[in-house]
Amino acid sequence: REPGGNRQPEQALRVAVERLGIVHDASPVAAVVTVSVGVAAQSPDGEHDPGRLLAAADAALYAAKQEGRNRVRSAAVPAGEEAPSECA
Image (cartoon, rainbow, N blue to C red; front, side, top):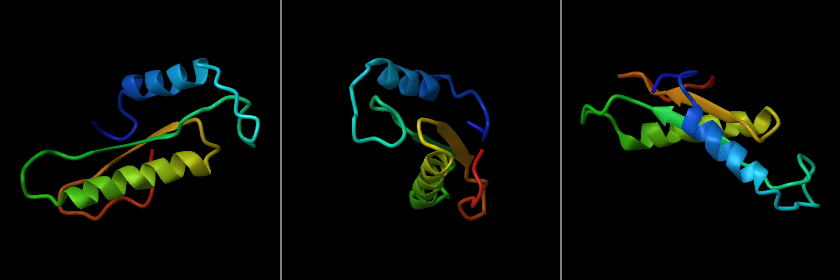
């Protein structure tokens, strides 16, 4: 999956959690429990370190939280490059 690509499964998860309506009085973000989702993708060619994929997903999750939480953000790990510093 490419950055900014189809995020339907991730958005469906985010919306489903929010619609549960689990009260979260201590949250400064929302009155109910929400989730932020970080998604990353890279071609499975056997040459890439899985740690780079995890780092990209972590960067996307951090970006979602920094943007206000309750969001989905994605990042790709291009072949031969380090994990991206910016996420879609």
